[in-house]
Length: 195
Image (cartoon, rainbow, N blue to C red; front, side, top):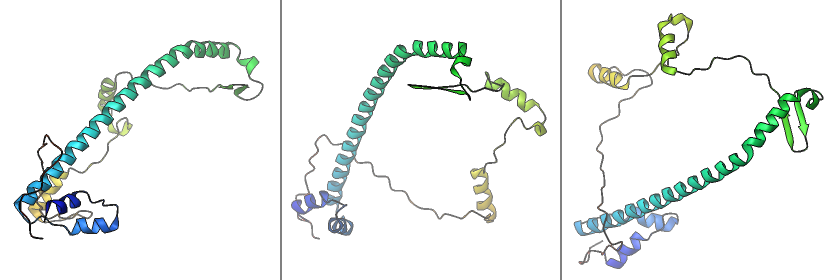
């Protein structure tokens, strides 16, 4: 395969059916082509990392801007919200014509009774107390969960395969770890490669 053919392979657009067929039919047949392909992978991974890094930085800037704008907005409106709430609490009878919602030009004020409730302030202490009570009280939820390690050991030692399980044959994982080259341009092998 010539340098030009390798560059064509590297530039194929897999969203185009004809180019996808050509890419899927292509195979690496020698070490120089393997080195070239690993260089293409390294460049792709470096570019992907640069994209992730740039996006993360952009998200960080957007998040910081959002926090600044929301902080300014809250400062500008929280005292008005408090004043409206105080007025609504003091003038409930005047505001409610019928029902539990006062309809205003710029919105509504709804009154809803909140029942008494328990608020957990120290989860660890509350859980310890709940666990000390009889199980029948039902204060602690128990979520049944499969112990995968124990189940696997049982199946592999006895050969018994429980319903809903299957044996997955061993496989080999190949991890590609291309180096991150300094330059983006990866030269093709110098010798001609037979197709």
